[in-house]
Length: 155
Figure 1 (cartoon, one colour):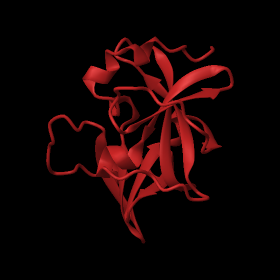
Figure 2 (cartoon, rainbow, N blue to C red):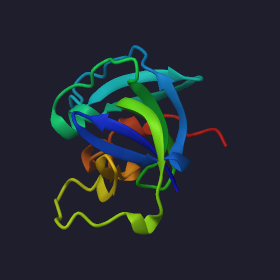
Figure 3 (cartoon, rainbow, N blue to C red):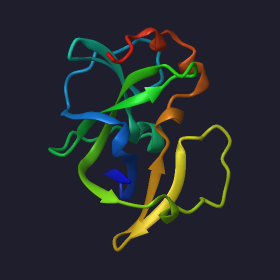
């Protein structure tokens, strides 16, 4: 399987490329009042208004830096009712890919309640890479919110 690599601080993470719709440069976001800090806001993607999560804030509490390699990764996200939605993920240094087999990933060895989006670990010559589970990125209270009333992916 092919994975997109990105960095948060000095740590490396990956997302399954098969779930990525497009990778775009950073744009201005429409802020949504009263949402958690890691929700950057909304943006218009080809006529669809989609929410964007800052992965750096979600994982470390620190906002993503606006580097030349910072991107919005638009992913296919399954909501709790198994409807396909688009979700934007803001990530730094999202410029490389890696090929891994499923068996290359090893369990974390610990279980963290409420943080289901942190997946298994693989590694290469530069160190460890943690897989993020796209469908687990939004907490239950956000999943139930009006964020999910946004348009579905055009089929």
